[in-house]
Every structure is written in structure tokens, then in C-alpha cells.
Length: 175
Image (cartoon, rainbow, N blue to C red):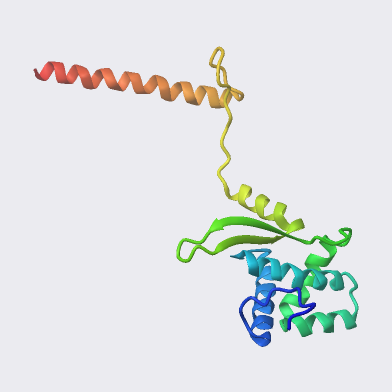
């Protein structure tokens, strides 16, 4: 009987389930955001959040406990050196699960699980890579925010109409 067993078995035996959650935890520590099925994301949240709570106490004992769960020195160091100081003030709720829709092949409900305090770092990294564009006023007298940009824009618009009538004149001369 399954009295009192409230966690999701994920259709796997205990060893397979533990290996799955360990690998998902390592991926979450490494990438700060992963996409998986909704059931796995919810199970990972239950598995991973106590590890982050334990990592707030930077002791040898807590490092050994977390290493027993993750079995990756790089991830343990990342958890203690990067993640734990960032979430030190937060009293739980270190991960966020966002539903992403259904997978095309089998219709499984997909979800994205991410570390809450690292969302802004990912957004800032993406915004730095984008090309910065100048903003211009939309209406009015046609003035732009920067005068240097306005002169360059008007110079290109003046040059284009001059080039077009020359082409039309050459076609009229040929006829």
C-alpha cells in the first residue's frame, strides 16, 4: 500500500528516480534554467529547494551532505559560491515553475524551471548582445532626439530621390 507516500514516483524505480533528479539538479545549477516536463519540474522543486536551504550554511558538513545528493564538485562549488549568497535573504521559494505548453510528439505538458534570483542576469545578458538602436520621435515636425542622427537621416533621404529621377530620365531618352 502507498499510505503516506505523497511524492511523485515519475514511473520509475527508486534508483532511476534518484539519478534523474540528481541529473536535473546538476543541470539547473549549471544553466540556471531548464525545460522539462511539468511532473519532473514539480518533483525537482521538492528535491532541489532543501539543497539550496542547506547551502546557506557554508560548513563542511553541509557541503558533504549536498555532495552526497549531487556528486559533482563543480556544482557544489557553484551552489555554495554563487547561488547561496544570491538567495541568502530569501526564506524559501528559490525556484519558479512556468508552464510552457504541450510537447509536439507525445502531448506531454512541458514546463520551465528556473532559479528565481537569476532571471535578471539572463535578461541582462541577452539585452547586452542586442544591437542598440536610436529612438526617434514619431510625429510632429519630424525632429529627432539626436541632431547628429537627424542630419544623417535627412542626408540619406535627400540622396535617394536625386538618384531616382536620373534613372527615369535615362529611360525616357532611350525611348
